[in-house]
Structures are given as C-alpha cells and as structure tokens.
Length: 167
Image 1 (cartoon, rainbow, N blue to C red):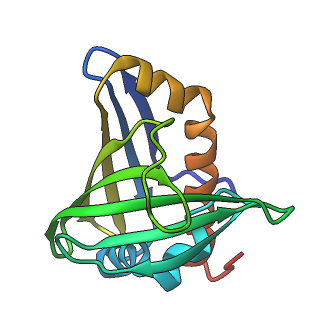
Image 2 (image 1 turned 180 degrees about the horizontal axis):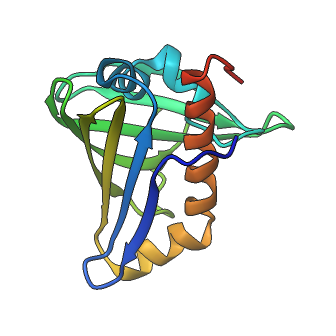
C-alpha cells in the first residue's frame, strides 16, 4: 500500500547509525500499542510474505521479546529484543540481536541498539527510530542484508493494520 505518509531512511556511516522517521495515520496510543504488544507486532513486524511469531514477550525494563521471522517455506530466523528503557507512550529502547529459538545470541551477526520515540502531530503519529551499531562493518552488514527494504515493507504492513486491512 503506497501512501503519502512520511518515510525518511538515512544511514550515517560516521555515527554507525540508521535513522528512520515514519509517519502513521493513527493515534499515538494505537501506534504505541502496535510497537509494544506482541499480538499486534506479530501482524506487521516481518516484511510480507514473512510472518512474525512471538514466543515470549515481557515489555518492561529488563524484559525480553523472543520471536521468529517465519518465511513462506516455514524457515525460521529467531531474534531477541532486550528492553533497556521504557517511557510510556513516548519512548522505549532495546538491544536487538539474532538468536536461536531459546534466545541465545547468534554471535555471527551484530547486535544493535534501538531508540524508538513517538510523537503526535495533528492526526498523525511520528515514530523516530535510531539504530546504533558498534562499528561500521556491522551497519554495512545489516544494510546489505536488505534491512531498508524489509523495514519499509513492514511499515507498509502497519499502515494496512491502521487502515483496517490487516494482512
């Protein structure tokens, strides 16, 4: 679903960061819920035709989401989000990493530090995401793996949920 909603995606190689600013045509409370509740995350977090499946999630400081990206052939890629900071309705931070189905880190892939900020302006909610990597090679690996394309498709899936056309 293409729309005129803002989507800025920039890579800063000096800072080893990806910056995404995305507009959603939904209330702040609904966008916050979509990013923080497993039942809703599983509807959009993976880029179609992939699906997200949460095995466990405790959205609290020190908590963790353990989930799989499940491909059309049933293949699974596991990941974790370890929540480090939560300011309700405005911001949360977490450490993201690939893992096995039990949540053990996959050290072949870099870990990234996500800072997700929410703000409401008029009838839109803006989500600002800053993803920091330890080193440039880690950032480049994620970009080469298709992060921009996958994240863009996932954001469009969230648009469909807000438009009442869940995938």
